[in-house]
Image (cartoon, rainbow, N blue to C red; front, side):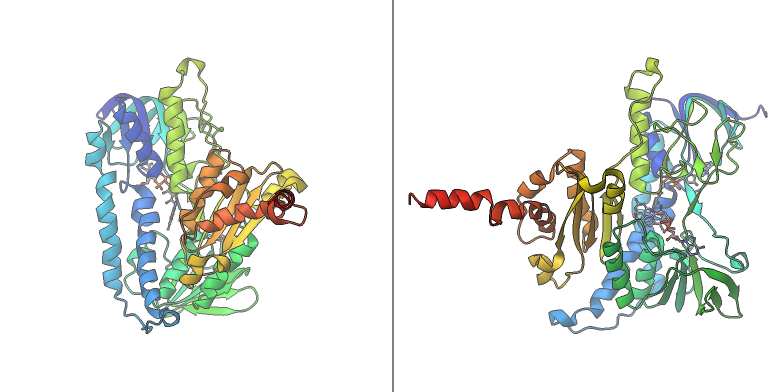
Length: 484
Ligand SMILES: Cc1cc2nc3c(=O)[nH]c(=O)nc-3n(C[C@H](O)[C@H](O)[C@H](O)COP(=O)(O)OP(=O)(O)OC[C@H]3O[C@@H](n4cnc5c(N)ncnc54)[C@H](O)[C@@H]3O)c2cc1C
Ligand SMILES: NC(=O)c1ccc[n+]([C@@H]2O[C@H](COP(=O)([O-])OP(=O)(O)OC[C@H]3O[C@@H](n4cnc5c(N)ncnc54)[C@H](O)[C@@H]3O)[C@@H](O)[C@H]2O)c1
């Protein structure tokens, strides 16, 4: 060990200043704990710099472009928009710059944390080092996130391809964007680049969105197809190669697809390399750091949070949730018991894909619920083609599906349609409060809103009981009618 490094002995050392690390540090520093945070690249991590924020910024540009083409049914003359790629990129960077101060070194030092802008690694079971600094801590949190993974497709390593780290700053706008992967990134970027004027082809080895309600996944894929996005899914790629001007994807079935640019959006690889995890006695593999349900690793003073945790990360709000659970376990619960109370396991984690239409879900899908609870599972649905607001706006694609157990307790749900990502909050509240469907049916929704569809789906479980031929209200009303 070099002796010239600055040394710290602190309550908490966090590696990685993304969504997980920053939430952890903000909490700990603001209640007076001593904290060192290491960040080797950009404060804010993937979400701010290469993920949620730039992707939602570019989505908006795509939406506005598309709105200009879609006026005809509303009496507004459609026009083909002129898109200035340099200006779109400036818009994206402007949005990042607006949010960046929230994640800045200055802000976190203002909370009382020490921020070291260097990569760090474990040198033993209780020490982390960077080029200039050595830290010993009561607890460590590894929050190093993930990177785009490169699928083992022959030839991929020989072509220039974009990932989420480069797609928002491409030098030239693609004339034909090829995308490997029809997950959230592939679909959001596929629709957006199409709307901004590119030809787009998406290739996936599996059917798109296989873990979602199949009828809802279909609505989303068909919407993209209607806008001109081409899908080859499921389809295996035999090879990817380069010509003087193009990139070619050759599928196993012999189809050749020629494009100007390639985006690889085929999942994420947790950032576990060069972290000295072996020296620290932390078990991990290429799918991430192994933890128990309380995010504790095989080294009891080291924890994981966010995308780097095996099988438990993948979304910004999951990273924030992890930080919140660790905060409670570290600082608010009796340490003498040496036990984590707040579990990071969660059966009510929402997710949303921000395409048009949006696809949002929470908890169990119907298939997952049936696998777990068999015939005791019921589903209720309501489609937007019966929702007055959706009809008025000529935006009736999709609907709401809620999965309940035999007692009517909400186990999960899926919404596909405009603003689904906002509407899923209703099911999130219901699940957080352990509510039954009967309570959701009693909500008073403002008219006309798309959210009424959630209440209407919930009410549909009781339609037969209220209005069927043998329903109690019918009999009661008939009885009282005799005395009128
Ligand atoms: C294109 C795209 C769009 C997305 N959109 C959404 C969305 O709409 N909603 C949503 O919920 N999620 C979205 N996500 C997922 C979300 O971005 C991630 O789940 C989230 O950023 C994970 O946060 P994290 O803190 O675990 O990791 P990260 O944000 O990856 O942060 C990890 C940080 O650790 C640093 N680091 C790594 N190794 C070291 C080291 N040795 N020393 C010091 N620092 C290190 C990295 O530089 C990085 O800054 C999207 C992701 C992508 C790629
Ligand atoms: N709106 C959001 O919340 C949002 C948006 C973007 C990304 N994210 C998150 O970022 C992470 C990464 O997203 P993603 O879309 O890259 O990952 P993903 O894992 O969700 O999807 C990857 C897709 O690539 C396909 N694939 C894998 N190998 C392939 C191959 N060899 N050939 C063709 N297809 C292949 C898979 O079948 C899958 O459909 C996820 O955790 C996601 O939840 C979230």
